[in-house]
Length: 107
Image (tube, rainbow, N blue to C red; front, top):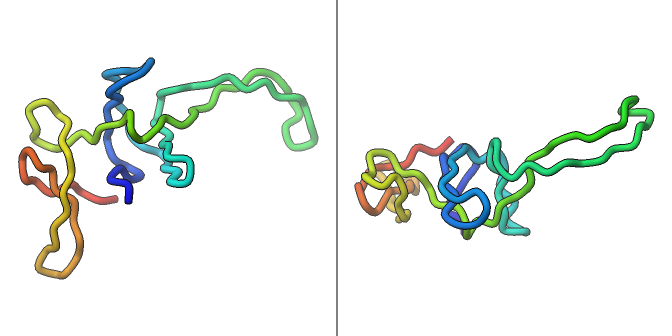
């Protein structure tokens, strides 16, 4: 089970984009990657076709391995925190930041 979900604020902890932050747009559990808004942009060379009349070079975000991402926890001194799970009064499973014991909002 992955602890990072769509809509979470994350920070890159290693690699080319170390210390950059962004919002997760998509998580691919099969590949173990996440697409983060504004990070790891790649250029695609496209040929013109019926759907896309113009060809050329377009930019798109590529996946970043989940092991290189850390969740930004609310009210944490360094910003990043590990996650634990707890069951609330309604019987729902919620994510909690270990350092601050604050609940992490799910979207």
